[in-house]
Length: 192
Image 1 (tube, helix red, strand yellow):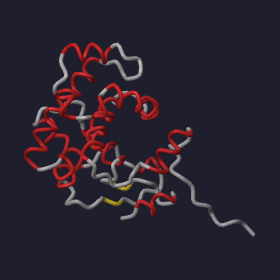
Image 2 (spheres, helix red, strand yellow):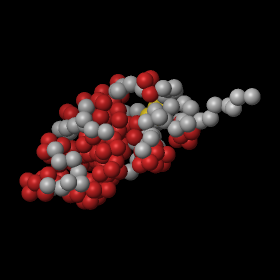
Image 3 (cartoon, helix red, strand yellow):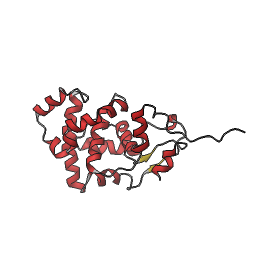
């Protein structure tokens, strides 16, 4: 008699670090403003790279960017940018590093306007995660209308490296959407 089909994690989680990330963080609704700022910066840094590359550098980013304190990052000077560009523990791309400073300024403005970045960001989806029912990785779109709307609004507020694909990746990571495949155990664990 054949065995029932066993549940399996999303197939992109192969490396041990990616498995840990998949099993504990990815898709879990996140509402902490500092962690949300980290997500904005790290997802922007990922542009053109693999998430595994960024995940391997995440602790270095946390040190280099002073724990992702947006008030401190917003005050970075040319000297700070040059320091970061010499740091082999992060992606040393001038445009990405400079965008982190601009994004911190925009982030603080959003916090002043909305009370928190969390309220601003989650307000785009009425504070309730979007739950998809994808069966294969091919089913998952690179972006959605919600990601396009958020991207457009962030760009209008001076943010950079926040295109719709980057924003959709961030939405997946912070649980604004549940894009675990339906046969992945995490699909039910992160909930609806």
